Amino acid sequence: MPLTDASFREGTGPLRHLRLYINVDHVATVRQARRGSEPDPVLAALLCERAGADGITAHLREDRRHIGDRDAERLAAAVRTVFNLEMALTDEMLGIAERLRPHQVTLVPERREEITTEGGLDVGRDLPRLREGLARLSAAGIRTSLFIDPDPRAVEASREVGAAAIELHTGRYAHASEAPEPLTALVEASRLGASLGLFVHAGHGLTVANVGPVAAIPQIEELNIGHSIVSRAIFVGLEAAVVEMRRAMDVARPA
Image 1 (tube, rainbow, N blue to C red):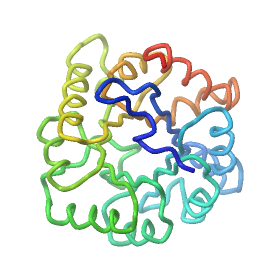
Image 2 (image 1 turned 45 degrees about the vertical axis):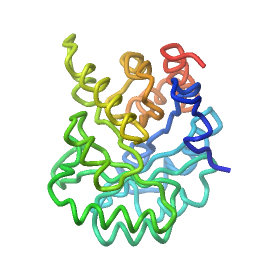
Image 3 (image 1 turned 90 degrees about the vertical axis):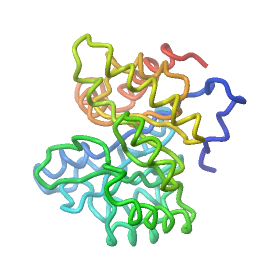
Image 4 (image 1 turned 120 degrees about the horizontal axis):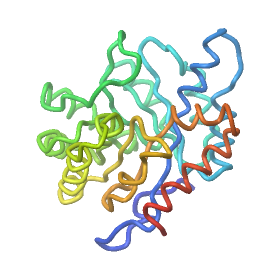
């Protein structure tokens, strides 16, 4: 059975297990370099699970630049932990999610010209449409999450439109030098989200070297990490890269 948020709660205190979801998009990116069949993101997902990943994340983009429809279908069928489908809020993607029924959908902003997701959703831009999309996903039995910047207004708006969870964009923190402000913003947004009854996740640009301070934030329940793990796997193998990240997270917030 898939793990749920309630499985890890200890009253109002810190979670005793910080979940690690591996994003397999960049495995598909390597495959698309030659438009072949290898490496297979589904096989990568199974190896990640075997190495201790708590879930698998994949972003099905409108332009299908890495993960394709067949990948999403196979992941939905093969993943034995939790499948988190990242997608934009479009009628096409909502229909795909309703058909595949992943455990979780994380709605993300999407621009064709970007190399990777550059920031969080502008939650206040179209509240009725976002509320309607979240309602459709919830009606299909899919847990919902919004990828947002660590901004109090975005956190509060996420609660207002009915999201179950928020994923805080950690890019500014990951690319900062020594400035404390980005980490402070993550801490404050995490506290606010939890106080509003939202499940709090985080991700983007996290590595073994910088994950510790984020993993130590007690309100964060789940980290979504992909690029650094796939990159490290070139040198040590995928399972070893997952184990390294898991260890770095556990050192920051031991069970």
